[in-house]
Image (cartoon, rainbow, N blue to C red; front, side):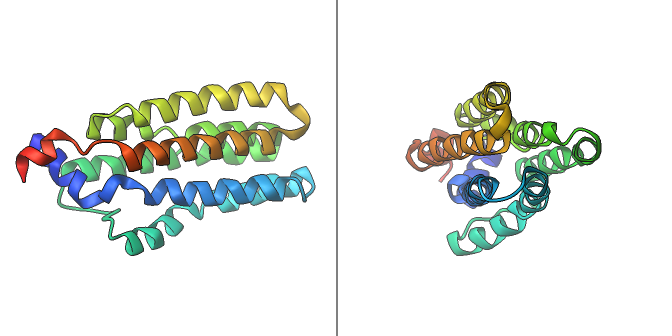
Length: 181
């Protein structure tokens, strides 16, 4: 397991591509939510969050980050987690059709769930903190700002990404990585 973790750490180059992409998308959604009718803004949210992964692939190429690996079982596990999160679209779409005010909350929380497994893989609390605080803050924002839910939740997520990107950039490289190389 130590060798797999070390290989994962080396290949993902601090795993910053997905959070950068998420930061860009959720920032755009926050801004657009102030300019568009709420029904249109939620529709924009649905489509833009679908752009996170393709955008992350482009960023990963520039950063020389192996976002998709078929060799390391831990990378495969992360891929399965992303798939798991995306299976929740069967919840988001009916919510959009019947209770659209819940869509920012459902997407805001669910699209951050894979961070828990990432934390376990890299043996650092960054993912647990991100997922936990993100879920709690989205929940609170949803109740506190009913007239600006999309903006409030998007802003919460942007702040979470900024904090997590700082942690990813500054966290010590795993001792497993230094021992295995």
